[in-house]
Image 1 (cartoon, helix red, strand yellow):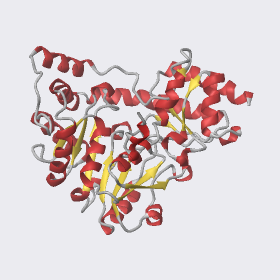
Image 2 (image 1 turned 120 degrees about the vertical axis):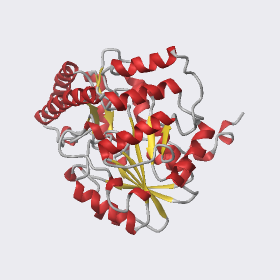
Image 3 (image 1 turned 135 degrees about the vertical axis):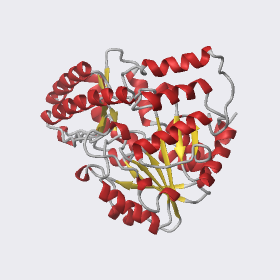
Amino acid sequence: MNYETVIAHHVQGLNRSGIRDFFALVQQMPNAISLGIGEPDFVTPWNIREAAIYSLEKGKTSYTDNLGLYAFRREVARYVERKFGLSYDGQTECLIGIGVSETMDTAIRALVNPGDKVLYHEPCYVSYSPSVQLAGGIPIAIPTHAKDNFALRRADLDAKWEPGCKLLILNFPTNPTGGVVEREQLEEIAAFAIEKDLIVLSDEIYAELTYDGEHVSIASFPGMRERTVFLHGVSKAFAMTGFRIGYACAPHPIIEAMMKVHQYAIMSVPIFIQEAGIEALRNSDDAVASMRESYQRRRDLLVRRFREMGLKCHLPQATFYTFPDVTPTGLDGKTFATRLLQQGEVAVVPGTAFGTDGHDFVRASFSTQYAKIEKACDRMQRFVESL
């Protein structure tokens, strides 16, 4: 069988995830310390796990509405209003999905026609451009830069916009850079979206992990609620990555369109998982605050140690990622990460996994225990000094 003629052309043309390919190498080195995966080292708080267990004990094993359990959608609407000042109807304007990745993909497939152009900023999470391509769209990357703390500026948008652009994907705070946008910058982006008649997909999964300043959603600006799909979930701030809970809030016509895509691909999220989500949003603020405090202490350690090694590293104001520039070592990001793994037994992710603009960078996560980060820094320092 000639599988090249079997596999769809648009799938053959996709690159594999640079994160997963690199970690296939890491798994072959059991003594390596990983600063690579963006996954909290905390176990999901007990009250949330207990809610899932109790749901199963009660025999809740059925399908739910395609949009999600109404009690959970209502809780999502309450949480989003309490935390972000955004008002949505849990009955008609919220959809529960399998993580933000699935809700983002669902939104793109619901909105993009073949040939539509989609703006997004790089470096960025690995799935945005492939999701646009899988929907038949044309991704247009907008570079962001360390000198701007990886924020997106109105001038960057003006430089890349062209006729046929329909969507703008935002991810602030940003994976992998930890970049944020200030209120004034976001206001300018909102004005641009209105002027160009763009729909904005706003991935704000790291909002609760903001250490400095305030987090503002673009959906809160005048004229933006009607043209924004607000995407969020519980994976990161609530240490619930394996639960795979994401949600989307948007005007009813968009949610209805997303539901059609979601129902034919996913049907619905497991009911006991959704009941754990209710407990997370309703009763876990203290646990989130405690984890955020721990992450901030780790961030300060990792950034200080990178700078002491002579690497240029901006201070991420949110997320649990640092994105140091490794060019002072004479190496590019991929070579640095590969040699660091082989010679120093520390895993970081080459910046190119997040777009070509990450060529000179690596992503190092501080979602690992403080003591492990200290040990990893000692190893990295010896590696850098050996170059």
